[in-house]
Structure formats: structure tokens, C-alpha cells
Length: 263
Image (cartoon, rainbow, N blue to C red; front, side, top):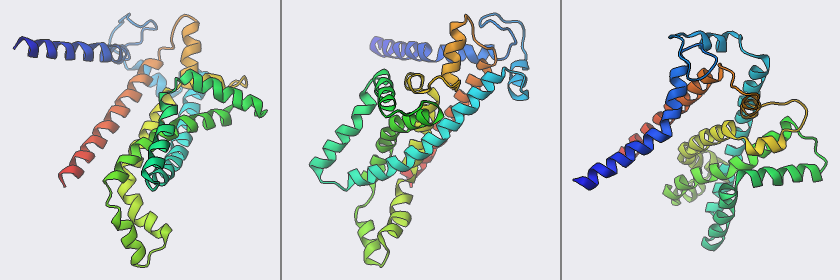
């Protein structure tokens, strides 16, 4: 009995530590106080300012750049990661294990090391840093996560259905499009959402590859804003919207996965 109480208490304490900062931001997004923690009454003014264009022009540009970079990086990394996962899956066991190990290295590698290495790579090739380098950097560290998302779907797939499609007259591309892609589609969607979220969240890699051309993303804007001694109030409703959107997507994906298991 005592062990159960302690285990549940530890679990709730851990959840409180993880989610209380987010909850505080969500609560204070419904007040127009400029300082977080100063409640001046319930208000939707920050949300109206966020959607009516009343916030700073630089923040608007940072939001647009962040989501545009995330959309491009997630799309490209989903395509590359899915193709790579199919290729790795069709290798021999030893080669597959070696490639899975190589794929896991960028995931386990600290972000700051990845950022510095990409910075040195772009400098050595004389590539001017800006929007393109940030997109390429995000694609490079998002692709391994897509491979990890797609690989379990390939392992669950019946390997004979691809050969059966070829025996029935389908070309390899037709078999890939009509047999394999529908089987791995849930993994591709999960990989896309994961890559999109990682791209929005990234700071360490972005700060090393963003250059000095005035390009800003949400993470670099928040960093620069915090160094000035405070945060733009509109960041609170923006953070709340992003969190709720990701939470809803995760709930929908998990429910779809549960339904597929039951079927």
C-alpha cells in the first residue's frame, strides 16, 4: 500500500514539474499584463493582438520564418527519411544493424555539436548563411527521426505482399506506391509531425546556421528578447496555441493507432 502511494506521488510530482510551467504560461496568456506573474484581470487582448497584427513586426516575421522552415524541412525530411527507411529495411541483417547505428548517431549527438559541425561545413564550402542553410540544417537533423518513425511500420508489414504485387504485373514503382506507401503512411505522418515539431523547437542548430542577414526564427527571437530583460507578451498566447495544437495532433494520432490495432 505504501509503495503504491509513493509511486503515485512520485508520478504526480514529476507531471507537475513537467507541466506546471506550461500551465502558468497558459493561465497568464488570458491577462494583458506585460510581466509574467502579474495578473491584471481576465482578458483576450493578447490573443486579439496576436491575430490582428498588433504585435511587433519582427515577431510576425519570426513566426512566418519558423513555420515556413518547419514545413519545408518536415516535408523534405519525410520524403528522404521514408526512402531511407525502405532502403535500410531491405538490407541484410548486419548491414541493416550498421545503418541503424549510423542513423542513431545524429539523434544522440548533442545539438550544439551538430550546429557547430554544420556551421563549419557551410563556411568551408563558402555557402552564405541564411534561410537556405537553416532549412538544410533542419532537414539533416530531422531525417533520422523520420527513419525511426517509419521503420516499425515496415517491420510490421508482410514482406510477401510486395513480391506478390510484382508477380501480378505491377512495376516496382507501382508496388511501392500502391502497396508499401499505404502500409507506412501512419509512420510517415508521425515522422512529419515529429520533424515539424523539432524544427519549430530547435535553437542550437539554428543559431549557428542562421547567419547575419537579419533572418529570425521564433527560438532566436525569444532568445534575443529574453536577453533584453523581458519577453513580448504575445509570446504567451502563441506558446499556448502551439502547445494545444501539438497536443490535439498527438491525441488524434494515438486514437487512430489504437483503432488500427483493434481492427
